Image (cartoon, rainbow over all chains, first blue to last red):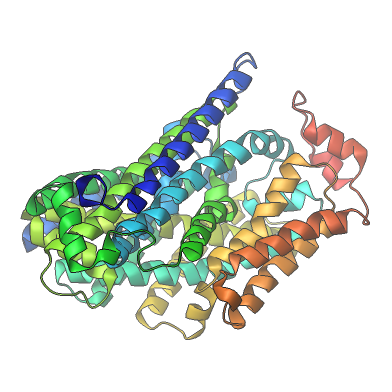
Length: 43
Length: 487
């Protein structure tokens, strides 16, 4: 049994959640860098 | 309780009408009506509200109720899929749709591949499954709201259906998006209010898991009642499927600046993640504290609401559930009506139709489709359950790869895409009819077929003109390609 009365196998969702969060944040950061300096593209 | 519920719902109805009226005054052209540009928070929240809606508040909580901790594996990947969709498609979509001047998903595909048959086929698939989708949404809404408010099922369906159809007709896409923002906040705020109150009844997370484990060890174990392979497969289904849903892809066409894309992706991801995570946990709390077994797991959320909340919060939460369903219904309504008015009527039936006429027709069709959806939700036809069993797979197999290849690969040919748009959904239908062999969801074979068909057929069929492709993929060029398309 893991912490908070939850078996260890049910804690596996949290590394997945962290991994997905990291992927989204890094990807968004890279895009932000790409678009910086492109000028104002709004009409 | 009843008076409070009516007051809260009347405030909500008034807010939706006010938003529709404001949206109508913000633009009068067909572009404003079908494909207006919006800020990052509006797009992120309309994406969230459209993608999750009842699937989070009602079905998601039902999954938590039925499957316990392992149900969270369905929640997290959906939020990821939505963010990846924005990150992957938005930037090239922004460049191309400006050059192509497209206002609908089908029109974009037709213009990208210079093909009327692709546009027509995309519109037909969209329309047929939109109508089926609408029936499912209204049925779910009617069931939940009638249970929570103790009113007849027909009354819940008719009132909600009429409201969504009205503001879609009156304010167009902008009204849909802005009401989605309200509905998105209502959904998220609702579960944020409900969860701590409900959890305090159990005594905290630790006690919740302890009680669930006492009811059945499968409720706290992973994969619990699933096989591990099926659970991981569903993670992929929920992540990948999100990339091909047209009502969500449509949101990438509203972006006003590429600089908004990181904000859109991050806001949609975190709001979805929090709302899903909490809603699924609400289902688990319902399992732990409600004394009797629900007739259907979809009733877990409404029953939990009326059990643990005081009348004011309960009325807000019931409204949030109705709002959740309406946020998807309105998106479906405007997509289906624009598919007929813009992509079928103006393109094939009456090429001389003015934009004003198409705009009026879109509005009227939204009302008509809303009425049809409402009536069929009251008296469901037998064929719609068959359609809806694999709509997720059919839409993903139809739209994901034509967009993905079309936005990133110059070598994609018209015939390659058309073959993919036929064979992909056909595979989903056949796989479903065969009873899902090896317990594999139709999404996998249909995506495999759709994804491989494009490069294979494109390798031996005629390419699009270089002049057109070079201009389309030139990020610095702002030239409209309408003349090149006609040529």
